[in-house]
Image (cartoon, rainbow, N blue to C red; front, side, top):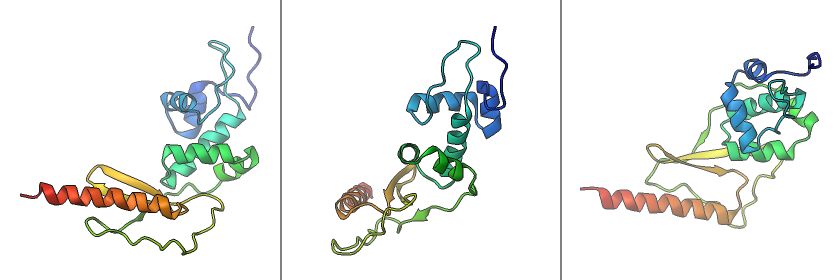
Length: 165
């Protein structure tokens, strides 16, 4: 005999509908480690409030154009109360920050230039290297990481030059 379902428990399909994702997406997030696995009870498996809060937070972070790896890092870093605040925040998409288009490389800050402190969520610059190929670089990335990203851009620009007829 199963226990009566409380308001803080959802079946997989109910949870997915409450957040606006598919049940398959919920299972994928569990597999990726973005969501904890629910306690398995066969057909009576239920998801709790933490699952709902985390799913809503994931949706907000996706609306801010963060890749899943960055979302996973944020979910691990934030407490449940902070996740609740995030989940209740505005999920309106904000346009991504674009770097300069290829082939001209974006300027790199000199090593002595101060970086923005890593408070709250990191924002990412989205660099379109080629149609269908993007590189996401955190605004909080250190100089060495930015230099590596610039080198990748330069290699792609060189490749494009060699491919011209």
